[in-house]
Length: 303
Image (cartoon, rainbow, N blue to C red):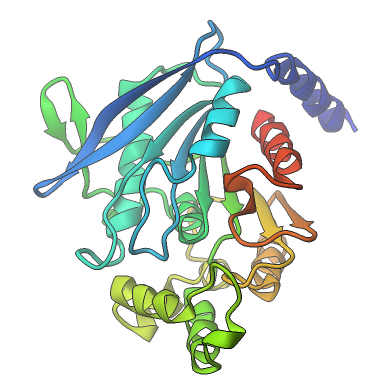
């Protein structure tokens, strides 16, 4: 009960910031992998108290997307007093797993060393395939494969020593948490014919992009978030919020029901919310449940 009231007070204090504040935007380069410079867009609320920081990981079936993809809710988060660093990262077809989580972990280390040091918390927010990558990096922040991307520093690009990529929380927005299950689902739906697909749903592209990034069924299976939890491979277990649209054709409800159960069994502090009547990506623009979802994100990030 005491913990509940502590969280309630913190939430009330943070909600004072919900009256929109002005926001500054700045493009930057946070890291480098080989010859690839990794860009980001920083949304900074114009206020003295830094509050939380979130690193936004865009979707795109591990093969497309851009740091401006989630601009609608990133801007809203920043107006509520949350600093947001939206990032680009390496993806298919040029790169394969685990290139993306190595870059995401580098972004966390960049935030710890090159941005303000007094953020109240640091977390990851990822949508669709970006939700998978945010969860994957959140569970395995300091894996050896995730310490290979250099970050920008005063002396050039360096691999920081002794800087953890652990985060306090992860928000998975309609995450593709079981890549192999979604791949098989997409293959089956592709064979059913275009007249059954529905709007904004291209299962053939989802299947080919997934295979392009992971390279094999075995790699997809190994990257399953419930699988990592069941095998006890994770080194960190942050607070987690899962957002699942009821009418999602890209990531059916059953996939993240499996994830929710695995997180409960692993002892995670997890919240999962189903949003009725909406489809994949609904909070990336105005709509009937968007305001509710963004308010839920703000409350969760407040802690």
